Length: 283
Ligand code: SF4
Ligand code: MG
Image (cartoon, rainbow, N blue to C red; front, side, top):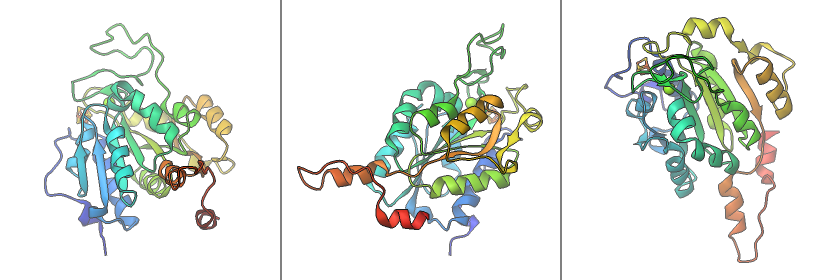
């Protein structure tokens, strides 16, 4: 039987004391153990940045890939072997900056992988520059007078462009984050999970305390309908996207299921319906 220890390694991360990424690593290890996954049947693919070092500290197969390229590498792994559990991870600079083109195209394919973005609203590894999701007015070495740009809205982007599971977690709430990781990994299709994971060294604005003060927890909203994407978009807009929980979930065939059906014979057509046994399982 698999236990939590099976997903741990002997080396310690080099993250700054108090960095949010420690809790993200612990939550992912807990989720994998709770789901009974096997380390040798799992691949964790990361990009470049402080958060991308997570693949060095999680015991499974891992690929520490190139800056912004975790998603195409993870896609290749999943398409080569559909039986693997594939998780991609990285930071907001990695995924929403240099990697944003890959993000957009992965969203619309519904590849059966989970993508965890450790979002600290800053570039941490390079000692503190404004990132694509830094708030307007945010001051850093690259925007000394305050950022004049609107922040990218990754959750809304994911919902509009075809992600079938969209959620947000907070490194200050490991229990909720673990549950969200479990649901995201179990979900059949592309799961996008943005995690507020504060950089305690370079971002002195969006701290653990700041998030605790501003976050709205969807688990406390009994009337929230996570199957309604318009509801999700309106809720995010109303709360400035500072929410945690599962925002949207939809059941539809994955990329490899569609493509396997389409390539059975030269005259096969795309089958966009959900396999019968899968519909039964989800009832
Ligand atoms: Fe974490 Fe920031 Fe330190 Fe990087 S620089 S390890 S993101 S606290
Ligand atoms: Mg970052």
